[in-house]
Image (cartoon, rainbow, N blue to C red; front, side):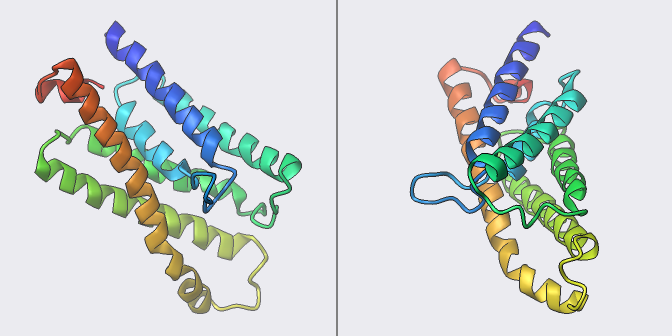
Length: 195
């Protein structure tokens, strides 16, 4: 149990750092990685499912998103256009990702079938987060009073694929690191659930 807890703290530190390094640049650039927030919440659910303080970690990561957004707006001159009455609903999108990761944690192995299932779960979780965040923005931001829901949906739908792909890419990188650590440490397939 002590090993599980110490590994959990390493995972938490990695997730906090990944969020801090990527959150303020939504799409990324040649010099900055794109936002990994959705992957961070999914991976938190996946890797911290058995960690006793997982709920507190989720809360801390949620606070971190607000602090990074505040820093980006106040110090980096990032537009505050998305900070509206709908902003609080992002917590529900993040929760959908974390819960999906937690759900998958009890079902995964490092088999090909499980990795294919992981792709589907990440895609479904990112889709749910996308719908939650965009529907709440449409309904509560006050920015689209003159636009129909159908027109709004058709405009934002073009971004869904990139959100899924980006989340999947970060999760795939984490799984590759996980597999490399297992191989280097000589752990068996059964031990892969211990992280």
